Image (tube, rainbow, N blue to C red; front, side, top):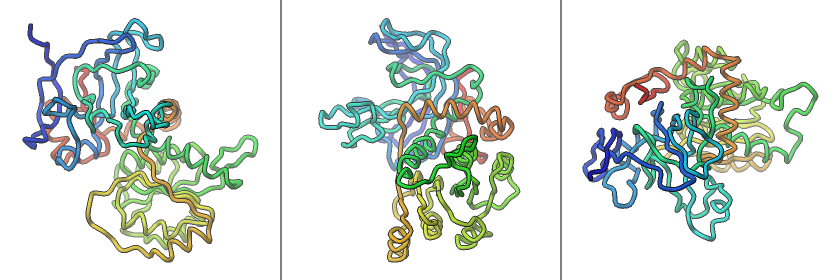
Length: 375
């Protein structure tokens, strides 16, 4: 008897091909597994880079990799030992799966976002099929429950987790000084200035997070206003500034002490230019990953002097843990209540799976495009 097949969108690295693939229809094989029907799958820069074949690897024994790591689905079946989900629930999955190395303390406690061996796999990216298909199976512990009222927005949870994890680290690091506002009735970021680099989905969602935390927030990116991104930024109470019109030095003069930089741009020249302007006791969080090559010169001596004399910290952050996903879902509900039109504006369009080529190897424009399997 032949295996039932379904549609999936993926890459065949050996053939350098992006295609709709006949993928095996999954069935539950373990009591802790959940079967999920795909609703929405977000397209991001990682998916597009995989489609240029610079990285991305299929699972062992497969000549293709199903794409997609920003996902929202509906539970259709649960294993006998699943207690946290039921048929009809909306769920968002995490991306990274732990390594099996017995010496990796992070993966042993389900903090694979800090894996110590790099032997993890990632759904839709590294050695594990993703979610850009009609149905998928996942272990219960890797799923996060979504309230039904967030049906239209929950596909944004995964990109928001980048900011959630970054801010969790920022708050922990900055306990080294009296940084967070602890006055009754005040938000923790009140009195602090934050600069967001980039106005893609990660930058916009990061700006929403920072405004919600009380930071006076500035988004520093390339395209001059007005444009759809600047309209969203201004609607949430942040200030939009073009780096083609304002230099990093002028930015610092305008902002005052830059307490936090949340980088979501992936452009080293701009990022290090702003790092030179980081303020006293400031913290700089890198989340972008530039393409290989394209080296730049940086004023290393002055950067080092600043870090020492100004008590600065620079961190890099990637992937996210379960708490970050849960916080992202909670914050999306807050964003919906505060800025419904701005949140609507992030998703430029939902597409049929048949439009995969335009989205993955074309130039669709807009902010966030989503493939919808809910047809």
